[in-house]
Each structure stands twice: as C-alpha cells, then as structure tokens.
Length: 151
Image (cartoon, rainbow, N blue to C red; front, side):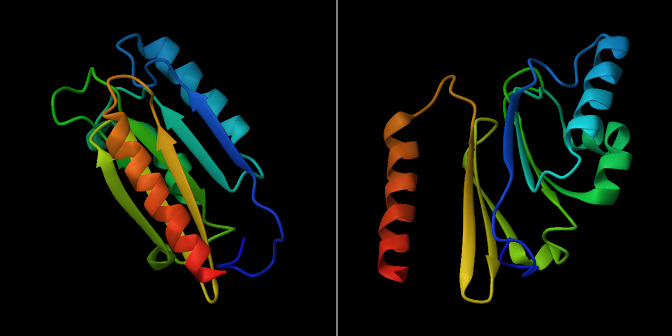
C-alpha cells in the first residue's frame, strides 16, 4: 500500500457480520474470534451490520486494535441499527495520520481515505439498507472526478 511503500497491491475484504455485537455473548465471541483469524495479512477489512457502539469496540476489539486502526460509523438512532467498521492494518499503514474517515450516512456509509506521498486509496464501506442512494452516488462520483483530475 502506498503509505508504507512496501506493497504493490491491496487486500480488501468485506463482511456483513449480521450483528457483530449481538446480545448472545457466545455468538459474539465466536464472531470476534472469526474476525481475528480472518484479519491476518489483510490490509483493509470492511464490516457491515455491526450493531454496536464505540464502547463495544473498546471492550471487545482490544486485541484487534493492537494490529489495526479501527474506524467506526454507528447510527445516531440506535445501536440496533446498522453500524459499519473499517479496519486498516497498522503494518500496511503505520501512521494513523494517513487515514481519514468521512461519514456519508450515519451507521450506513463511510468513506475512508488512506493517503501517502503521491498516492491514495479510497474505500467506501456501504451497508445497503435504508440508503439515500443519490447522496451515496454523488459522493462516489465526486471521488471519481477527483481521481480523474489526479491522473
């Protein structure tokens, strides 16, 4: 990945966790363990339908936070609605200052910009329920226009 300068490709994974932070602690624990196992050698990991809060991230993702930057976007309405998280490998992007998250739709759509010297990677994490589609399309078009100017 550009910011660290040692990779020529980016591994991006997406997962609809179907309630990562669910009420059943056993199920939640198994999902967190599965996530930890699947994070190995991945640069960017996008999770949808987390149904959580920053407090839950702090409590249940302590080990993940050692190896990945955690960028969360939770719903303003309820912890039981949506929620998206983007995990960025600290090995691939060692400086947190290279990463910027923009909330496009609370709990539904995030834009994550990873910027290095002369390069950038943009990732949209979208949970496609209750979307204001014109807003999402406009955000993506703006990125495409900006990228075409960079070329």
